[in-house]
Amino acid sequence: MRNGPIIILLGSNIAPRANLLAAVRLLAAHEHVTVRAASRVYQSAPVDAQGRIDPAQDPFLNAALCVETDLAPVELKFGVLRAVEAQLGRVRTEDKFAPRPIDLDIVLYGDLVLDDAENGITLPDPDLLRRAHVALPAADVAPDATHPVTGQRLAEIAASLSGTDLRLADDLDLACAI
Image (cartoon, rainbow, N blue to C red; front, top):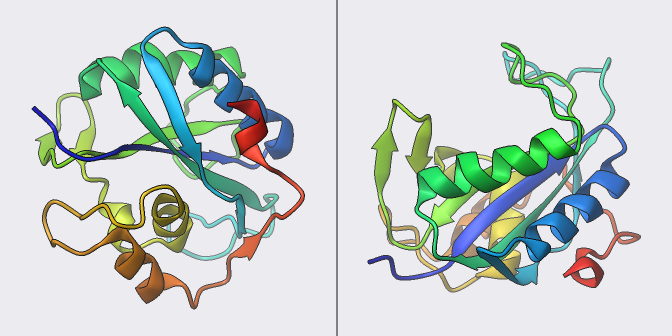
């Protein structure tokens, strides 16, 4: 049994305001998902496979949701998140850094630690410890939750990454879509 919050990260750089709102609405309407909280929305620069800013792409908007579900991580990823991505026009390609209308990832699933290579699920998401666009929204929705491997509070992780080039997108409130 898992203890702690389930956090889903949302990202978009194709019609991001519309797609983030639509994704929250679709997730909130799903019979197996209850959205409990939405983070602030952050704008970040798009990067390429080498970690360099990609001037050919528009900036990303990222946010996080704290949810409850009775689904296992694999069911949540493939039965819900991928279905919402497809509904919003996401077409997966080999380039994981390509522009996209929506990207939905499980960042934290309570205290579960999982490395499921067959299904492409690593929990907690390794980017939680190294990417501000993941850590800051996650800390917004569950600041006192702890990383099940390091024991750090999400607020501490976010504070260690907060000096990066993220901007708040104050004109978008995802809580209105819950």
